[in-house]
Image (tube, rainbow over all chains, first blue to last red; front, top):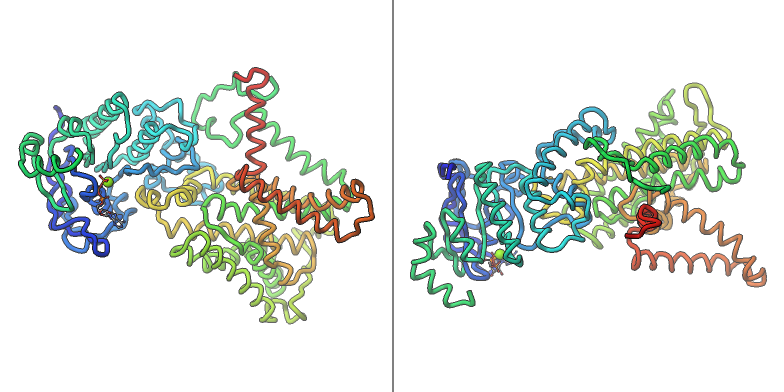
Length: 260
Length: 355
Ligand SMILES: Nc1ncnc2c1ncn2[C@@H]1O[C@H](COP(=O)(O)OP(=O)(O)OP(=O)(O)O)[C@@H](O)[C@H]1O
Ligand SMILES: [Mg+2]
């Protein structure tokens, strides 16, 4: 592979997160390196989604520190994480239901758009130029993900698999440094999964985007990940390259103990 | 083959993102502009201009205001009439108290005043949603009307807050005739509708809709919740404020705070429900519908049922029809008349070959 794995870009240290009495994450440390595909696996309720929510500021952990590009990160709101180049998709699709595919993907570029509402109201000169420039970028994403023929469709009318793809498109439109994907292949058939894997690998390869992936399909995870971290009941029980993780006795126990 | 995009290929994204990408729509738009901008004032009688066309335009503007807040940004408001009141009384005071204040400047200042008040009452939206926010805007409705009555300064010490709008003069021309007032109203409303359409089809509108549809996802892709919601409150109130000022200056002439009561707020809400939530055109359709329906029923009901039923029956019948329509649209077609129109167009586009 052409891409070179770089330095640590996100470093999570001793993260603990509680919801009332529920301990979602307990003392978890791991890091993500630039350009790698880093997977988070674990049984249901292990705290995987919570982990992503901590990384992009949706949840604020009670304990622990997060270093981002080497600097200690203060309490960060989701929109600030977006400004730092972190994009994501959600486990339960979080598209804007009342908007078309095109508009949904256009929202992904909002941080790169500089015109204000008065310029938008006039839709003249700068505002129109900007809208078109970003439309061109969005069309590239649309072409890349092969969704040209559904551009103008309201997202609510799309089948599940395509909605997942549109959500990925919206995240990619932001040209993120780090892409957080929460079960992007859940509920897909084999063919759709293959497409999705291809897209993820392509993004990683062409744009060097760092990817943090949550996925239940072990075949996929072991295939495409550079490194894997394993959570169980909010605790880290394994971390390493796929081979190591596969042979880790604790991981095997956790997985045999559940339906996976 | 009357209404068809066949053969109209869009070579650039600029063409594809026009307001009216289909040529027939563009022609239709200009025909409408000519009809309502030129033919109507020339041909209509005074009754139509004063009692129907001017109020329809003004209510359309208020409905656009509410649609921006509720239809696009998803923040339910029951205070539209109060923001109209702010606009009306602000315009009155700017013209009264500032020597030589040009009317159009007063109109903009009235809108800005309403926008400021709107931002103030929009602050709770950062914490509360849905039903509770509606209750908060209800508080705005009652508080504003109360304040305008309570402090005589707003109405220049007139009894119970009644004020008479000054003459409307622009560049030395005074708008006295219904025709001239109609044309002025038409131009302002058409311009503001265009500006609103532009906002909702660009990044500003996408921010509003994103916050409406899923606020967590909106934040995660970088929209700022507070800024987006407050901008919706400001722009919405600006529109309602200008509508209120026009209501006083080109429509009824004499206004009192009580005239901008909760009933009127509900009327505007019904306009967007019937016309189409989240549609600029729907705002016009809804306003026209709600202004015309009572007039239509007044004329039709006695003919069908005879005079024997008495005057009370007609007004009750109106309420029943309104109630029924609101329920119908809420359940069957939440996107209102605008959506029905769109469906009709889609059918027409395929006609006569449905497949
Ligand atoms: N917002 C919240 N409020 C309360 N509890 C929460 C919240 N989010 C997560 N939890 C709890 O935290 C724990 C971890 O949940 P999380 O969604 O992170 O698991 P997960 O590994 O993503 O599971 P799955 O594979 O089912 O998606 C669960 O016990 C869950 O109930
Ligand atoms: Mg999860």
